[in-house]
Amino acid sequence: MLLEQRREKVEEILSHYPQKRAALMPMLYEAQEVYGYLTEEAIREVAAILELDPTEVYSVSEFYSLYYHKPTGKYIIRFCTDMPCALVGAEHAYQQLLNLLGLKNGETSADGLFTVEHCVCLAACATAPVLQVNRQFFENMTEAKMRELLETLRTSGLPEDGPVMKFQPRTADTPTGF
Amino acid sequence: MEQLYLICRHREVPNLHQYETYIQKEQGYQALQQVLKLSRDEVIDIVKASGLRGRGGAGFPTGLKWSFMPKNVQGPVYLVINCAEGEPGTFGNHEIIENNPHQLIEGIIIGCYAIGATAAYIYHRGEFKYGAEMMQRAVDEAYKQGWLGKKVGGREDVSLDIYLHPEASAYICGEETAQLNSIEGYLGQPRLKPPFPAQSGLWKRPTTVNNVETLAHVPAIIRNGPAWFRQWGTEKSPGTRVYCVSGHVMRPGNYELPMNVTARELIFEHAGGIWKGRGLKGFIPGGVSAPILTNDHLDLPLDYDSLAGAGSMGGSGGVIVMDDQTDMAWLAKKMVDFYSHESCGKCSPCREGTWWQKNLLDRMMTGLARSGDVEMLEMVSEQMAGTCFCPLGESSQMVVLGAMKYFRSDFERYGQGKAYDGVIPMSAIEHH
Ligand SMILES: Cc1cc2nc3c(=O)[nH]c(=O)nc-3n(C[C@H](O)[C@H](O)[C@H](O)COP(=O)(O)O)c2cc1C
Ligand code: SF4
Ligand code: FES
Image (tube, rainbow over all chains, first blue to last red; front, side, top):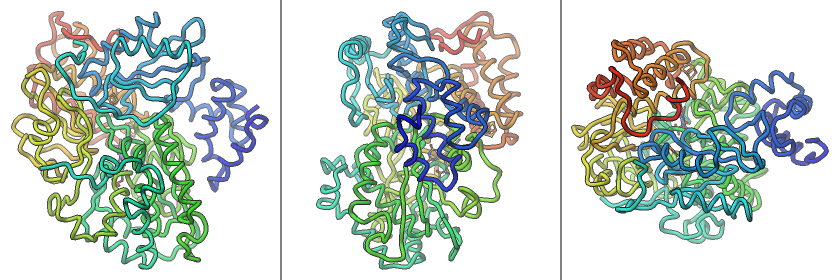
């Protein structure tokens, strides 16, 4: 399926490396997009393209957090609760998000729209609380902004991506989550 | 002292991500043209004389690192650009790649020329989707303009390709030898050193690994000379660095400042001081792997040697600030969560040690601590010291022992059913 749908891209990736095996990480991203998640078939196809054993492909893919081995929602929300963010209330804000979604950490909504999970530092700690939707950043989250974001995703999908790191001074009414 | 934008040029020049702006407003690619008229050694000498040190963590002198690369080798030689930026509290590279990608690309090409590299891989965090797009655009433009590909800048004998390689969120892949394994398609676990990457790196070929910010400094150093760069910072840590300030401050953000700025000035003037009118309890000066410092250390300049002298380190430049109501046992718990999640599993002191650290701290947080747990936490951490295969495991013990050194009573409060009185970390509840 990967080869049928993205032969050109696959060949371009392979051309970056002197050895096929090195194409594994970018190839897993491609496979994930084409198959939705890393199904057994996806792993087998990547292994065949790279002339590797499927178990090897599987074990490497398991090492990283951004490869999924189970069906996920259309939107994967990853919310940073690592220490620097947690200092300013990220754990509390994450709970608010879970409540808005009616989900527990790691779950996918019944309508197949959202998967939600907490994660380690996203390299945006000054704009905490911060989350990603399909690897696109949303910063300085409040309960109201999260509600609005979910609504946007439901009705019109992801907004256009752009630069982040929109640093904001704290004010007396900056939510702190404590 | 004022902020000084050697790296964050985009703060002064709008639209700097565009090639035309970089050329017209920033003398873009002129340093590269200069370099192409010099020998490899001459370029390395300029960078050596500037005193530039790696911004990725260890602060190793960049020119010296480049000089370790073998000369006159047949076959491929590589530069790997470390854009993994996974150290909690660090977000300087993130700002650079999204807003000032051409300065980075020019620095990469110069670095490749200096070490004789035939290809470069930008190993970027999987989460940097937009940042990767901006870097790819800058790379494409550089190819179009003849700065990449065959005959770089018109020189018949120089060719170079730059490829982006996406990682997929594993902190250990920021460590340079783990990064090499990861690019090759193996588990991202560190390699034994020696051999060092300069002798045997990517596919056993000579390889240098440099951080994004390190390389972004290079074009201006070439254009303006080493003395220009040395007018800022200290003798041994010249120039500026992007300090990333997070935590309990009024104005969190990136601050680019000469490296002799003190912690006091950075935290209280630039970052606006502690929030809610509270006092400072502690700060971490160089990403979570740098042991915590206290009020007594505020007048230290934030250069590599002063921080090392105080028992901590400059590390990644991530300055994390804690107010006087922070529970340091909670802080240790959150950091150990990180390390136990990110342990690559290769060696048992780290794999098992972080698990035990986490287990003990989870008990404290949830009110299940038993008598002797503080001592056991100390013992487990001490047993990890010096026995882990790489600095990740060592960081986990240093973080805990560092917090216990200054704030032991925060740990001793637990026991007799007392739980953490703020939001109990979700991971502690899930664990029990
Ligand atoms: C656990 C661990 C994580 C690291 N993460 C990073 C990182 O995200 N980015 C980085 O540039 N260096 C990181 N480093 C440091 C690199 O190993 C290496 O020293 C650095 O990239 C060299 O570049 P420089 O000389 O330009 O600083 C890490 C080191 C360790 C031990
Ligand atoms: S110290 Fe931890 S991260 Fe480093 S090699 Fe050992 S298990 Fe892996
Ligand atoms: S700790 Fe949350 S983005 Fe860094």
